[in-house]
Length: 429
Ligand SMILES: *Cc1c(COP(=O)(O)O)cnc(C)c1O
Image 1 (cartoon, rainbow, N blue to C red):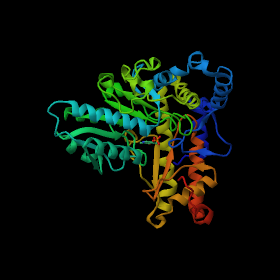
Image 2: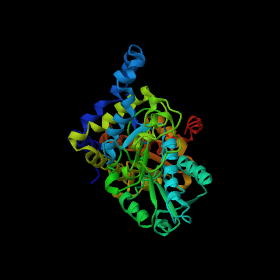
Image 3: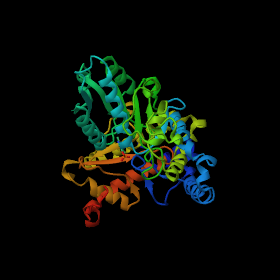
Image 4: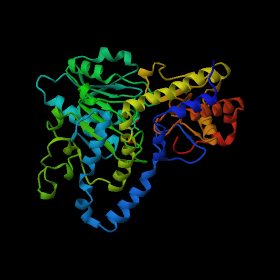
């Protein structure tokens, strides 16, 4: 028998992670299903950034680089993120954006391949056509610069065939941003290594969303985003990890002064710092770093309750509940299909829905009509029939999942998406 809203309220009452929601400020009447694009604001962020601005900057002035530990922030917050992605202490730093960090690590990987003797025919970077565009754009630029070819596959089924003597770097995003499909990082890394190649993993939709174990997977390079599941705030700095066996092997291309072994010696010649520190380029944005730390702390707060494994379980419980409700209420009447893997093991923290053929091109307006009702999900161009919903276990409850589906039923039944105000597109979709 189908569950009622009351059943979902009971699931909320039994949910041991429910208290974590208090860490966030969310506007009343909003069901936020877009933490996969921009995480919600932690309650601690406003006070902490005020403190950094008014006390550390306003009063401490330049003394705060030492006294308030500003210079240590990229490492201190990096160590916290390391706990979420299975990396060791001192192996992760926070710096720049995901795009820039990808530029650094992919370039380092290509340098490393070129430096190996007998490697002259190993000149292919493999990624997926479905990868996030910035990853592909950065790879296109580096391929051009270093004389490599970027080969894009259309389906993960093609992966075994590209693991050959030409493969230099396998560059994948672990969780696909559109469909939420998850790659097996450990197995693919092992296959790439067996073929003699290196791996670069983008963790934008994994860090803080699913348990990640970079060291167990024996990955080579990884980067990821601070403003999605890590709740660091819009444009928050990103992170970078390099396996310690590679960290000292080559320069990264953005050889800025804070990646120097002795930045305050102000010498003429660049000498890279040991380890991950050389992946820092210039002066970190301290106010943004403070906001990121508040966001990362919201995830670490789950550690006493089972950490990422417990968060992952709740996220799957939420998305499974959503899928069940969509099947029950939206499939037959409106022809809505699940466009993400149904197997929870293959699905990240989001579920994408495909609208029926008759509603072709209406995904954007449907999302707008939902937002008009306080249910915030999103839409991505290039997949005009797809609606995307993120299930962030830190602040979402089961009754909200029920309500979100109820709103979608109303939007489709009343054809609200046809209203002109929902058809107009803003600069950011
Ligand atoms: C969000 C996202 C990015 C964003 O990169 P920025 O440099 O922060 O703009 C990159 N790659 C993937 C896979 C993403 O999901």
